[in-house]
Image 1 (cartoon, rainbow, N blue to C red):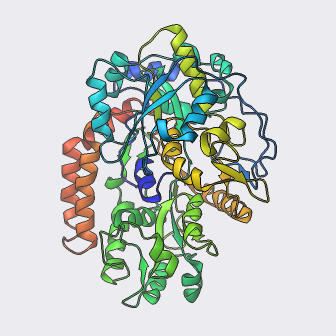
Image 2: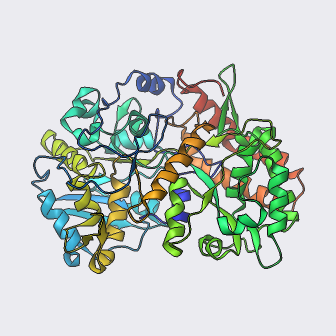
Image 3: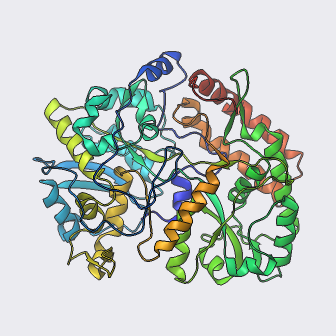
Length: 538
């Protein structure tokens, strides 16, 4: 239910973003790193009641379902709540009707056993709402901790205000909550700070940004796929005619794609001596900037840099390609034109010889810690988290995402749930808020277009051949949390100026010096101090 453009931001997928604040080893202190390395993560036990049509893999390949399981199975035995629960979360859809006038929310509360009272923030403004509640004398029971909205001092804040859940979730202890045990170790690492587990993670697609193009448009030049940067440049020139343009104007996102073709690292590169080199410091990325400037000079970018969403223009052919999060974003285009399945660009070496990279995304959108409380309440809240983490295809998943059959949803001819008119009014904002607070592992599911599921699955397999993960993912730098977003924004401003011709390429080195002295070098030291030994040399 998260919008395409906003999801680009919330997942931290845009290249050059600082490593997510709400994750990792709790700071540069080696004590936190040591504690985190010694922590026993929750035992992983996949849910056994469902069998995808297309199996997933530890590499990040998402399982695919061609239709919703015919007989949804129950994943919990009893309603989790005896007492009302308060929670702070965020929605990226239009806020839902309030609980008192929202039958879907009321039905969820009935299934839970007591009221789940949500305070639902919106963007922008969530960090301010979070800070206000944090400073108050009465915290809600649960508070979603956003991964990239600049909330500082994560480690000290958690220690002071929130409940250490390690003894309830570490190792086999998590097996008391089967749906939480079905969350992968990679997801749990994002909820570890100072060697302790602070909440249930919120998994999302592990795939990062991709370039997608309208195949009807690209057919004029032999298709979207290319083997060299020069070939791509020539195709873009041919597709641009003064009213139609090859590329959307989101320069930084497009630059992310070009960086992959030039072999740029996913945020950081691990050197042989275990030191780190940032993306901005590489010749690969600088070459990608020069390439982007060449494309801009050729006038192949849509000229309005303030265009909010290129999707409608990609659908009608006015823009040939845009950047989205992950191969599953094909659904955004189907929503506007049911006949359109967009192509996904597979990365290629800029010169036809060098090996490209494909930047995997972070795979979660933070985690939800509990305020400090007593043993009984902790277990009640964990049972709630277990319910809300119910895997795709379960009865609990249906209640959380679709409501009640005959009221908020009906079944189509293939027995897939489809929202009714009432469901479309009651569900989107509520489901978005619930998904942001708590989610199961992601799957590929396109009920109206099952062949899309097969195509997306095949695309993910191709992308994984070039997959590179951010080596600092799952670690924490307080400097990155405090000043990383500001440093990134300043550097990107210079990059946009260079690409659009307002500054010369010489401005790159000066901007890099400011980035380094403003906190970049300190971030490097903090990340290097907690870099797990298991992370390979890039």
